[in-house]
Length: 273
Image 1 (spheres, rainbow, N blue to C red):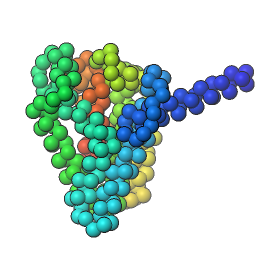
Image 2: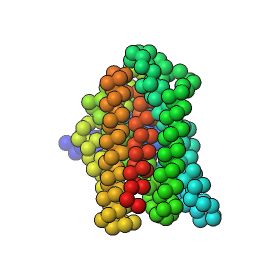
Image 3: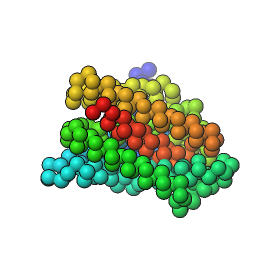
Image 4: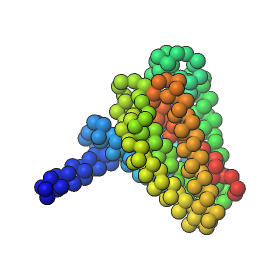
C-alpha cells in the first residue's frame, strides 16, 4: 500500500512539474522546454496558467515602475507595461485576438471562418480590434499610473496578468469542445475539471482582492475583485460566442479570450479612481 501511495505521489509531482513546463513553455517565451504534450500535462499546464500570467504581469509592472523611477512620464510607463506582455508571448495572444476577430467578422460558415483564421495575414476586423484593444490597455494603464500612482499601476499590471491567464484555465474546462482536431486548442480543450477550474478561480480572485486590499483597504479589495470577476465575465461571453460560431475553441480563441480578460480587468480598475 505504501509503495502504491509513493508511486502515486511521484506521478502527481512529475505531472505537476510537466504542467509548469507546459504553462511557461506555451504561454511565454521563457526558455522552458515542454517535455510532454499529452492531455494530462495540458490539464496541469492550464491549472498553472495563472502563475505564468503572474510572472508576465510582474515583468509588465516592473517595466512601468522602472521607467517612472528613471523619470519618464506615466504615458511611457503605460506603453511599456502594455508592450511587455506582447514581447513575453511573441504577440501570440494578440495574433489570436486578431484572427478571431477576422473569423467572427467574416460572416462565413464555421469551416470557412476557421480557414480565414488560419491564414497568415490579418484582415480589417483584426487590425481594428488590435488597435482598439491596445489603445484601451494603454489608456487604462496611463489612468492608473497618472491618476492613482505608481503602486496602483504596477498592481494593476500584475493582477491583470494572472486574471487574464485564469480565463484560459476556465476556457479549458471539461464542457468546452475543440473546434479542430489539431493544434494547441485541441490539446487543452476540455482538460480541466470544473471543480479544479472553480478552485483556481477562487484562489486567483482572492489573491487579486488581497492585492487591492493592501493598497486601499476594503474599497481596494472590492475594486480588484470586481475587476477580476467582470474580466472573467467578458472572457466567458466571448468564449461562448466563439463556441456557438465555430463549434468549439482553437488556439486563436484562447488568445482572444486572454486579451479580452486583460483589457476588461484594466478598464474596470480605472473606475472609481
